[in-house]
Structures are given as structure tokens and as C-alpha cells.
Image (cartoon, one colour):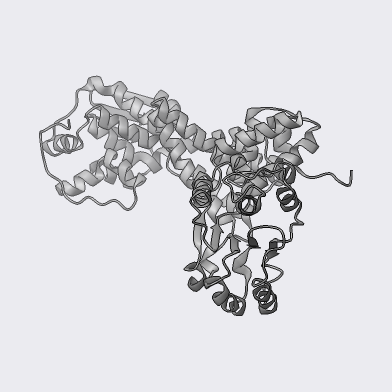
Length: 499
């Protein structure tokens, strides 16, 4: 039990053939060995857990293998075995985070001059080299510029920008890439197969996504999930082990936001995320993953309306994810953003506008009809009512209070409750404009209730300029509501239809 090694150490690559995701580094080092053009200093830069130190050790084995220098170490000779165990005298590993002072570098500088004991090269692997002090870097400069021919420096760092340019200019630099999702999943699947662990592909994808391109992180998370699951990994126990919100909650939450159901959204957030102690940042990443998949699926299937909805949410969640990382009260910020999202103008407006453009509706011709006094035929009554129903969810009730007489439509307020009368008063001007576009005169009869403002609205017909008429057009209003920063630059009266 004491000799147990974690997966990340057991399955650490030991040869160039086992390295995944860093082909540009591996091929360059192999060719350098093959041609004998081995530089005296290399800098491996990249995010954590992508193979910088592992490749440095493999390179050290390739240089000091009994058969070397060789493009592929044998892994069986005494030199390769000792390097793997960390006891080979000519491969010296240093952690610059804990040996960052000038004294340690002076000691290194004195020992550099000594010849190798067993191997052909003396290799110094300095991890997190950016942690060295300025004085330590200065002490290293001369040695790094003209080291003995048998010395090779291998520097590893996650922050190359912190290294002085005088050091960078003396090194051959390689930038390591984060592993792709497919690469990480492939390695995790191979480990599970060799360890005799049953798994679901979706579970490994979740682990790889959480690791964000770091193979070491992915392997450590896999170890955690295996210990939790008891040997069989599926999506449910993976989410539980990693502290992720259930997929069903994520799906329901996105649907609630899309349907603008604020109460249900906040209930899900409170009962299934905050009260259960889940990290709000992790929850947001789960939402982003779900919305991104929905966006891709909608786009591939040609569902423009759904794609627009998912894209709007995706941009909103990206902004939330960025802000909550540095916000002292992430839960409060998240709640406020959800309130904002569910009270924005309906996302359907965008798709409706797109449909209007696709059906070749000419905004300028609409304005022309209003300007010339041309009236739509009364047969458009149903179209008029359908448009109002699309704008106002309560129109289905109001429809029962309508009296139609030729081109005049009267709303009998006496048969409606106070709340519906209030709604009509707030939206009356918009409703009258829509009615006017269809050639109807809309009257709100409040059965004796004094309403001078109502009469003023019905009788007032201001003489507007062409640009003002365009701005008052319902379709233009909807466009300006969706794009608040937009302005009407110019208006031209044209009979040509949009093609």
C-alpha cells in the first residue's frame, strides 16, 4: 500500500513514442539528436500538466542512454532506469520555486565545470525557472552563454514572460500546447482499459473538459472519480465526484431562462445549486457547455430561431463566467444577471425580424402607405388580431371584448377587469398604430370613464417628417429596441422591393 503510485505517475510517458499532443517538440528534438545539432539550452514553455518536465526527462534519457545519443531511449539500460528513478548522477533536477536564490545558482555554476560521472551529457532540468530572482538570473548568464560542451540546460516554465530577455535569447524555445479534448479522452480511455475500469465515453469527456487541456489534471481527476465510483465510471457519478450540478438541472435551467421564467430559474438556482454547496463558477461552465452544444446543433440543423436564442445566451454566460471569477459575491452577481436575462425584450423578436426580411417585407413601402393615406382592406382583420396576440399574451382575453364595425374596432372596457383595462391603457398607443397599419381605427370605450388623454391620442395626428414616420413604424421600433445603439442615418422613399 505504501508503494502505491497515482495514475499520473504510473502512466507518465517514458519515451518520445508515448508523448501525445506535442508532436512539434518531439520531432524537433529527435532530429536534433539525429543530426548531432544539440543546443546547450532549451526552454519548454506552456500551461501546467502538458508534458514539459516529462519530455525533459525523456530527452535526458535519449542523450545519456547506453546506446545514445539516440532518437528513442531503450528504457532498459542502467542509465535509463536510473533516470526514471531520479537517481542518475548526471541528470540534476531543480525546483526554482524553492531554490531561487543566488547561492543555489553559484553552487550550480561551480558544479557545471565537473565532467559527467556515468553518462555522456550532464543535464540540468530546472522547473518553474521564472521563479529565480533577478540576481540568480544574472549569475546564470555567463554559464548559460558558454557552458562546457557536455552540459545541457532544460528549463521548464508556465510563465515565460517573467523570464528576462537576456535568458530567453540564449535558449531554444518550445511552446507546448494544451491537449485537445479528443487527445485527452483517448489517453484516459487507454488508462481505463489498462486499469480494468469500465467507463462511459461521456464521463471521460466531462473529465477532459474540466481539466482544460492539462493531462496531469485529467489523470488526477480520473483517479478521484475511480475512487468514488468503485470501478465503473458513468456520467452521474463523475458529476457527483467532481462537484458538478446534475445535467438535468442544467438543462431545465437553460430552458427556464429561454422561456423567461424568472421564478423557476431562481428556484432551480437556489434549491439545486446554492443550497447544495455547488460552486457557481462550475455551474456556469456547465451552462456554457450545454448552450454551446445547443448552438452547434441548431446551426447544423438550420434552425435559425433556436440558434439565435442559444447564441444570445452563450454570450451572456461567457460574460458572467468572466465576471464571477473576480467578484466578491458571485452568487449575487449570477442572480442579478439571470434577472436581467429573463426581463430583456423577448429573443423571439430577432427571429421574427429575420422572417420578415426573408418574406421580402419592405419597411419603406410600409411608411409610404402611411404617408399616402392608403388603407389596407378590412379582410386583414384576422392578421391584425394575430399580430396583437403575438405582441401581447393577454390579447386572447381582450379579443372577447371587441366590436367590429366596418373599419372601426371598439374595445368595450366595461366587460374587462381593472387589470386588463390598465394593460390596454399602457399599450393603447402601440395598438392604435398597429391598427392604423391595417387600415382600422381602434377605440377604447371605458363606459363613461373620463379620459381626455385617450381622446387626445385618438384625435392627434401629428405631421411627422419621413424619418420620424419611419421611427414610429412598429417594425422599426422593434429593431431599435433590439439594437439600442442603432440610429437611422437616412430614409429614402422607394417602390423597389428588397431582393
